[in-house]
Amino acid sequence: MARLASPAVAAVFLAAGLLKIWDPAGFAFAIARLRILPHALIGPAAILLPWVEVVAAAAILARPPWRAAGKGIVAALLIAFTAALAVAAIRGGSSCGCFGVEGGFFSRLDVGLARNVLLLALLALGERQQAHAGARQAQAAQAD
Image: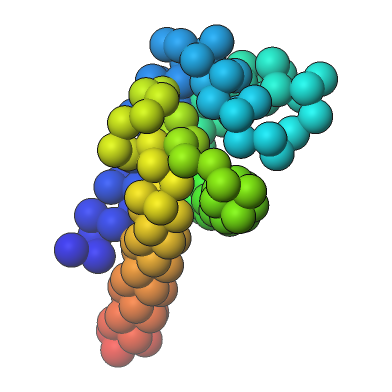
């Protein structure tokens, strides 16, 4: 399970990013409805954020030197997205557009908040498993 945690997070970010890239205008509208960014930043965010998600997801799936950077970027995005969703929920919002589908189940704010907490937990689980594997390798090397 722990071995699949980081690739699962990467798959979610890859899917979400690609869906937003497919419909940047829809994503821009979703960002505008959240009322978390100044109007001048909505367009650039709608264009850039999905690409950051896709590149970070690809980095998680790449060779080890890239994985740590990808995980760090995804963790930072999840924290920022979770804060933005919490603010939107407090303001009475109902949809985030997280998967490019306005009004769909996966775009509900409560589902988005729960999903983000789960994804952060999966990243932490993956890191913990990797740290334990590294410690076992170090112990095995010392035993030889």
